[in-house]
Image (cartoon, rainbow, N blue to C red; front, side):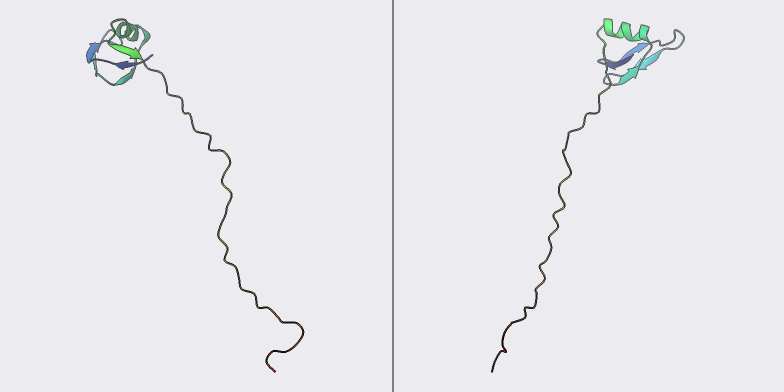
Length: 82
């Protein structure tokens, strides 16, 4: 069981060794030890944070700027100048 410690204290996860559990840290402990810490209010149960993502919607349309090409116009009908 995952717990987040509210104070630094010692505990034995296996009945043979004693470990120090630091305030503010989160530990994955055996059920029995976790329940002691929870009962004494030295820790609270920590839950996995779900990875929620914002829905960004559809991808934006590609709107690249295109330069307008100048076209040469032909004059119909007569000649210029004379």
